[in-house]
Length: 521
Image 1: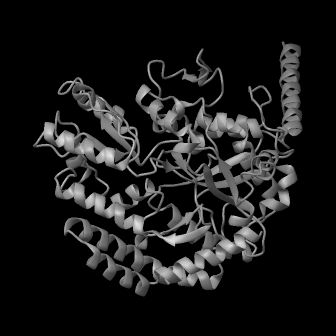
Image 2: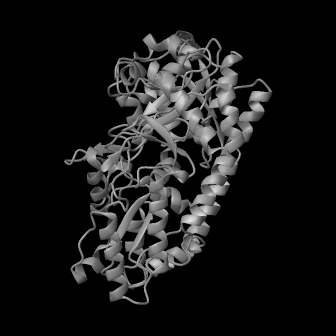
C-alpha cells in the first residue's frame, strides 16, 4: 500500500514538476494562442512580441467590463500582447486624458482624438513616438499611406512642427453616404407621378407641386437648427461659417461672403416665404420633426442620417403602411455631396521602451485580419461568410446586428481601437433603401472633393482663433435673420462689412498663404 501511495506521490510530483517546467517555458509569452484562425495580417508576424508585454490603451465606451470581452481576449491571444484597456465614457474621456497628461501618466496608446495643437505640443516635449521612425516595421500603415500616392498627403497635413508624423491614422471606416443625406417620400411621389429633381429649380417646382396637392403640408422639414445653413451649403460646394477651397482657381474663399452663398439664402428665403419649408425649421426638436415626418401627408422631404429611412418605416408600419422614405438627389445646383472623409483620426503612442509593440498593435488593427477582428470577430466563432460574401453573425441568426449590439455582446467597434472597418460586416449590410444612397456615391461626378488639410504657423493659428468664434456666431445669426426677415441687398452689404470687421478676409489670407506652402511641398 505504501508503495502505491509512494508511486502516486511520485506521479503527482512528476506532473507538478513538468507543469512547472511548462510554465517556465511559456512564462516569456503566456497569452499567445497559435490555434486561432487568423486571416491576412498584411505582413506582420505573429505573435507581435517574444516576451510578456503589457500595453495600456485608452478608449471611449459606455460598455462595461471591456477588458473581459470576447474581442479583448482574442486580441491578446492573437497578438500575444497583454492589452489593458483604459475605458472612459465619452462625456469625460478628454477630461481624463488631460488629467493623465498633466500628471505625466500617459497610457501606451492614446485612442481618443487629441486636438492637433495639443498633440503637437506633446510631440515637441517628447511625449510621443513618431510613426515615421517605425515605418519599416508597420507594413499596413506603409501600404496605406506611404505607397499610395493619393493618401500620402497626411505626411504634410499632419506633421508636427519638427516635420515628423507622430499620429497613427486609419483609413476606410465610414459609409460612403451616411449623414447629411436628403430623403423624400417615394410613395407620395409615385402616387402623383412626381419625378426626382435634377437641379435647384426642379427641387423648387417639386416643393410647389407638393404644396398644391397638400395645402396644409410643409413639403420640406428638418431638425438641424441653424446647422441647416452648413448642411445646404455643402451641396452648393461650400462650407458655411468657414473658408472653402475652390478647385478651379486653387484659392480659398470665405463661404458666408460669397455671391453663391447669397444665392442659396435667397433660394431658401423664397421657399420659406411660400410655405414650402417648415416655418419651424430653425427651432424644431427631434421629437417635433419626427412627428411631422411620420404623418401620412404632413412632410415629404428632409435632410438627415440615412438610417431614418428604416426607422420611420418601422414607426409607420401600422399608421401609414405605404410609407416609403428614400434617398434623394442633393438640393444644390451642382447636385453633389461632399466626398466621404475616410481618414480615421490619429492614435498616439507614448515615447517609451514599448513604443514599437504599441505601433505594431495599431498596425495589426489596420490589417485585413485586424479590422475583421475589430468589426466581425473570428470566423467560425462569431460569424460565417454567406453566399453573398457578407458576414452572418452566429448569435444573431435572424437579424443584422447593429454596431452597438456587437459592442455590447463582444466588445467590438470600440472607439479608440478601430482604424478601419471590414466592408463585409454589419455596418455595410445595407437595406434596399440604404443601398440606393451608396450607389449614388459610386459615381465620382456626384461627389465634391474634400478640401486640403493645411498646416498653420503659430501666428496664423492665433489669427484664426481670434476670429473664428465671432465669425461663426455672426454668420449663423445673419443667415437666420436674412431668411426669416426677408433680407435683401441692403442686409447683405451690411453683413459683408461686418464680416470683414470680424476678420473674414484675414482668415482667408491665412488659408491662401498656407495653401501656397502646401502646394510647394
